Image (cartoon, rainbow, N blue to C red; front, side, top):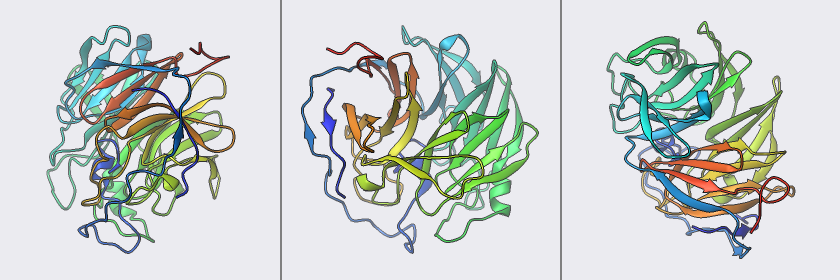
Length: 353
C-alpha cells in the first residue's frame, strides 16, 4: 500500500460488519432488487511522494467491526461473531480478551459492533441480534461491561426503533442497523445506518432522536466540543460523490459538508492539530444492497481545506473502523485484520519522507 493524492470525484455495503447488513437502497427501491455494477472508481490520482506506511498488526479477529482507544492508550475492538471485546497492544499487536459473553451475531453479521469508554468503563453497541424478521429474544442496544463475563443492558434501542419508525424512505429491519457509538456529554451518540438517524442515549436509558436524515447512510462519528463530525456512506451504489464527511451541532436542522469524494465512507477521526481523517471501504461491487465493497479498494483519506480528500494509503481490504494514536492510524477490517499506518500526517504534525 502506498500513498497518493486524489482530486474530488465528479460523480457499507456498509463497510463494516453493521453496514454490510444495513441493506441501504435507492429511494423507492425494495431491498431485494439487484443493483447495477457501477464503474470501478471515479478517483483520478496523481502521484505524491510516499509518506505513510502500512503494516499488518493483527489477523484472525472474528467479525471485527468497531474500535476505540481505551485505558492505557490500548486499542479495543469488537468481535461480533464471538460476542467479545478484545484489547490490542498497539505496539506489539498482542490480543487479549477484555470481556466475552455479549449476544453474538445470529445472521452472519451484527452482534457487538462498536465499543466506547467513559472513564475506565467499557460500553458495547449491539445490533442485529433480534428483529421481527428473526426473533431471538436478545436485545439490540447499549450494554455496560461490568466484568469479564458480566454485562448490564442500559438502553434497548431496538425497542425504541420499533416504536419510532422513520419515514420518507424504505427500510425493512425495524430494529435498525446500529453502527457507531460515541461518548457525548456523559452519555452517547449512536448512528443507525439503516434508519438514517443519530440517537442520543443517556446512561439511565433515555433515548431521543438527535438528528434525522434522508437516505444518506450515517456511519462513523467524531465529537470535538459542540461539533459532531459524521461520515456518510451514501445510498446504493455508494458513489464517491455521496461519500461525505459532514458536521453539525446540537439543535442543528441541517449539516455542513466538510468534504466529499470517497466511496462508501465508514468512519471519521480527528488527528493532530485540526486534521481530519476518514475511512472509505471502497468501490461497491454490485449485487444485493448491503453487499461489501470490492476487495482491496478501500483507502484512508485526509480532509483537505478545499473540501476534497487526499489518499494517505490505498488498497485496504474492506476497512470498517479507524483510530488514531499520535501520528499513527489503526484500521480494522471486515476480514478480521488490523493495519497500523505510520506517519499519517506530514509537517508540522509528522515527519514527511
